[in-house]
Image (cartoon, rainbow, N blue to C red; front, top):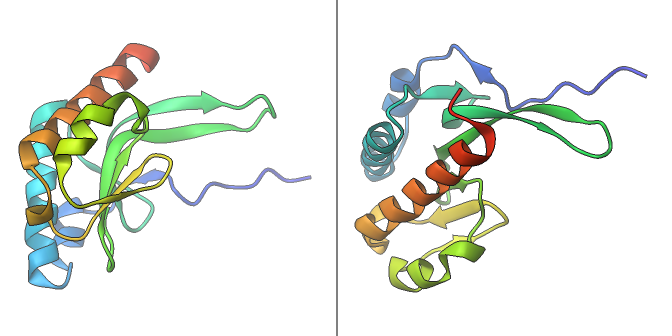
Length: 142
């Protein structure tokens, strides 16, 4: 049986070109602010993952089932319905910060924000920094 190929992989597409094509303008402006925040806190260059995700760093995972691959350590995607931030460590360790964040929804490791103005950007940065640091501690800085 052939191994399934992951759709979400790091690629050489232009982050700037992708962001410049985001509509509406407010979502594009928010995405550029998140890009600047993540560049500053990670100290790494952004890379496109798939067609719509912007990621920083990467790590190798392997499940008990034998399935393995690479994924971004932190990232985001300016989707139509919300700005999705990928906080790979999840939100359980951020309970107190989440209370201060503002208006949002979460999935397992996704933070969905309609508009950046709906949240406290300093709290968002603190959550992102904590997640980045935890991922580097667990998987190294390569």
